[in-house]
Length: 174
Image (cartoon, rainbow, N blue to C red; front, side, top):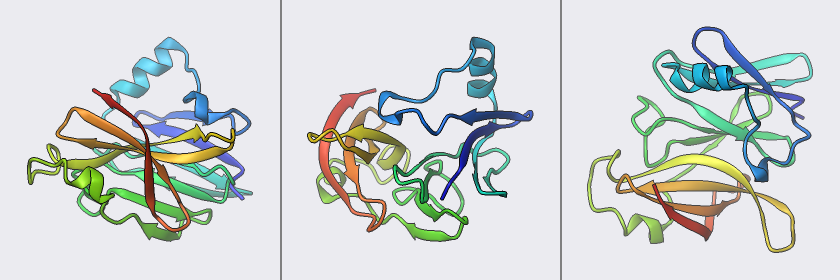
């Protein structure tokens, strides 16, 4: 089981995240100065612990972010749309707690894919983030933010065991 989770960035930025918080309400608050340093750093990554074992996903010049799953057994990592290995539209990788790859998420749902107007990954379709949401029963679920045409976002239910991207539970414009 994942016992600790950190958001990391260049210049030795390392923020531990409280695993007892409800991520369906957003990410943790940071001091203004810390927030500024983090969001202006040129490289971002993630780190988690399983007991004494540390697992880091960080690459210089890349912005990699993610979130643990609600059962604390997997980590969903979102790579930049133009990452050399994990590029869009399959720029999400689900890691087991020991950092072995459980699966690379395949092309997103056909409903979103038909909205693509461009062949360019940046202007086309990519996964922009992973979030926790509450379903109609109040249970915490994992969802992905699918971004297309650089301005539209669909938040869709995500099954991190099967990689299936399901129903749209929200939309907005950037």
